[in-house]
Length: 335
Image (tube, rainbow, N blue to C red; front, side, top):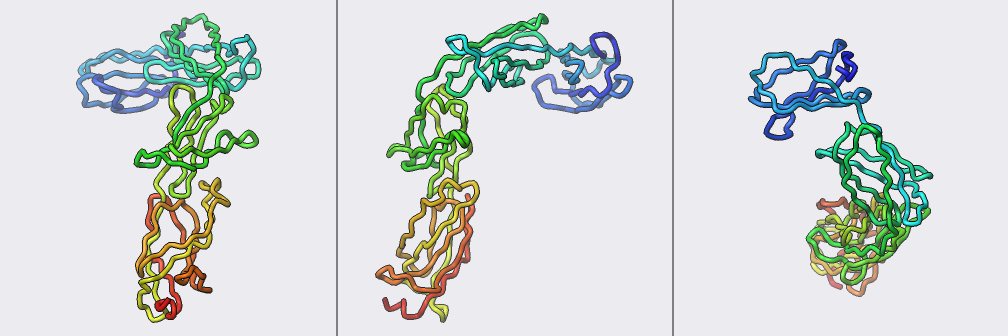
C-alpha cells in the first residue's frame, strides 16, 4: 500500500534469497494491492516498487511465516541540484549519477546547470558528475526528505593520456582514433608505442579506434581518472587456393590485394587501403584483416596483375572465410 494507506495496483514485487541478490520470483500486485508467491528458500527478502508511490525492501524473512506480509511503499525522493565550474558559471549537459545499494539513477544538467532525479528514498548516496572538458568528481552525501539542493562544482580537466592495445594486450601503432561526434569529431593516430594524448575538450566524448589489421574497438567514454585504454577487436581471415585452369595448384603464385571497402563499423578506414602483393603457395591464408569487402587477384612474379584473375571476398570480425578459389592462366606456373 502507499504511505497514505491506499492499496497500490501494479507494483513490481521481487523476492530474493536472503543470502544474496539472486532473484527467486517476480510478480505484480493486483487491483486490491495484493500479491502471492511460492518459494523454496528458507529465508528471503522482498522488494516492492512502483513508479508513482515509491519502493520498500524488507529485512530477512523466514519462509515459515504465515502472517500476511504488509508492505508500505516509501514515496520517491525528488532530488535536484546544480552543476557549476570553478568560476560559478553553470555547466550544461553534465551527467550526474546518484548511486545507493548497488543501484542508481542519472540525469543531465540543463543550460542553467540545473538537474533533477527521482530516487528510491532518503539515505546515503554516492554522487558522480562529469562533463565534456571537466574532471569527473565524486561526492558522498546523505539526502533527507527535504529535497536538499545539491550543488556540484567541476574543475577544468588536464589532457588525457591513453593507449591502443590489440586483443592480446600489445600496443598498436598507427591506429586511427575518432573522438567525439560530428561536427566536433577529432581524428588522430596512435604513436609507435600505441599511446595518444587528448585535450580536455574530449572528456565526456566517446573514442573509437580502428586499424587495418583488427576490427574496430567498442566506444570508450573519455574520462580523466587514469590512463584511457582502447582495445581493438580481432580481425578476420581468408583461406583459399590458387590453381590454373586445369585445377593444378600454382605453388609460386603471388596474391594481389586489389581493393578494400570497409564495413559500416569500419568506415573510418575508407581510403586507407593501398594495393599490395604477397607471395603465397597454392594454398594460402591471410590473417589480421579488418572487416570489409576485399578484392583479391593473382600477379606474375614481377608483380604484373593478370587480368580476370580476381575474386571478391567478404571478411567478418572474429571469423575465417574459407573456400576462396582463384583461377589463373597455366603460363603463370612457369613465371
